[in-house]
Image (cartoon, rainbow, N blue to C red; front, side):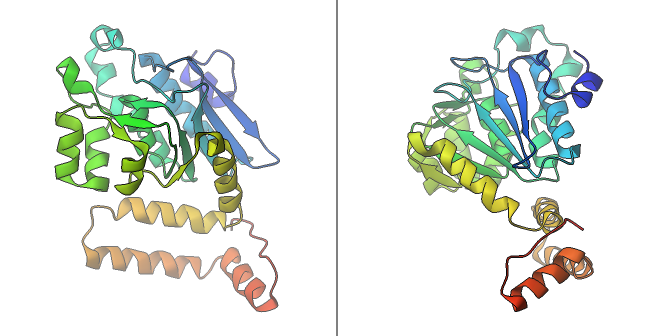
Length: 268
């Protein structure tokens, strides 16, 4: 299936190892890994996942994007033999494809349970919110194969937990428990396994209550200033704040506050 086909119909049954569901009433689009029991990610699947995220980001019915998986494990990682079979130009795009959730203007939530290894961990790190079941284990095990993470995992992880903990995880192929991931700031929320879906639903509904334009602005600003100096980050924040002052949503938010009623944001 071509990328153009996916963009036209992200819910197509021809997707490799995953499916897409859109709930227009709840303004939600789900990308669901569907190759149980371990939900391994094939090489062609990575390109399709990128296209699916791009399609959902462009879909006006969708406010919030959720990445989740069937079964007791989110993903044990990539299909190992695929790395030897793939051409160099394909391998060189791995990080770009897996970074698709970060490039989405809309908020992206991932629900992690069980094994979350390799590319499963890397694509989770590219999401904005990680809801983690108590059964979850995170790992970047590429050292055991004579390799290093190739889809942005070590770079994103270092931004979150620092170089010392990243070396401990990457260079020792060490598994991180759900509790340790939460304590280190890798996961946004830690919940009982039976509560994972409900916690994800709650976050979706919470995020839907905010202004779409304010959320898009906040996400882009935070992503763009991650490597910026403090003075530059404050300068860019001021410019974004100034632009939002002219938005319909800001006016609605102020009026709703003074009228003591829930705001009715439109995203403009």
